[in-house]
Image (tube, rainbow, N blue to C red):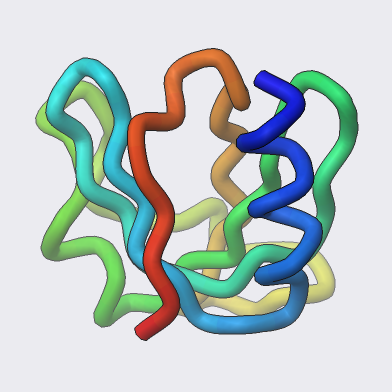
Amino acid sequence: MAEAYYNCLQCMNKKVRILTRDGGVYEGTIVKVDRENVYLKRSAKGRAYTSAFLPPYGYGYGPYGANEEILTLSLFTLLAIALI
């Protein structure tokens, strides 16, 4: 998990594609990383790749606007991360 943490730190504020162990694929910009989670700001474009377990809409309020949302992913579930 330490490797995932440091990889996410290297990709802070960059557009990435994240693959998770359960088959999820997420695109967006990493806005924060802590020792347990990575926080991904997804735009409307990134929603096409989300897991079937997540709703296809954002929260619509807050500092990121109506077309963006922050997704919290556990570092334990990360399988791969790639810059896009």
